[in-house]
Amino acid sequence: MKKPKFGGQAFYCGKNGATHLSDATGSPHTQISASDTVWSNDKYESVEHMVVANSEKERFSIPFFFLPVHHVNVKPLEELTNEENPPKFKEYNWGKFMATRNRSDFKKQTVENIQIHHFRVSEQ
Image (spheres, rainbow, N blue to C red):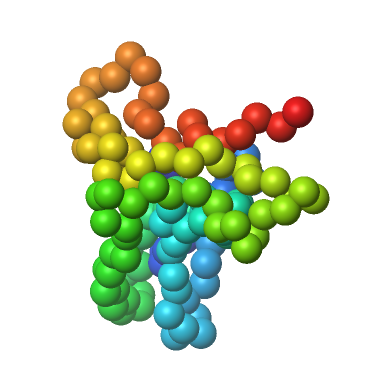
């Protein structure tokens, strides 16, 4: 990930590049998880992000992780899918997904680490 030239938290939105989320308002910011992307049927997107130090302004962060238990199968919520908006992701088991990711973290890979986009249903 390339470090942006500004301080504060940066969100990376795919091909759109770095988008800066200003902390000038003093408002809390929430980063959603990949499971939220699937549950919302892609209405909300979990994006790669990082924090960049700002030597001029103090920052206070409290990380809190709200994730499914390992036996849960994750899929788009039925209330958010219909004929006009079919499921955009295949169902997967959260525990198996996380175990696979954790086994491959920090290892030199010849293939990409498993990601949520691997469960995306191809559009016909």
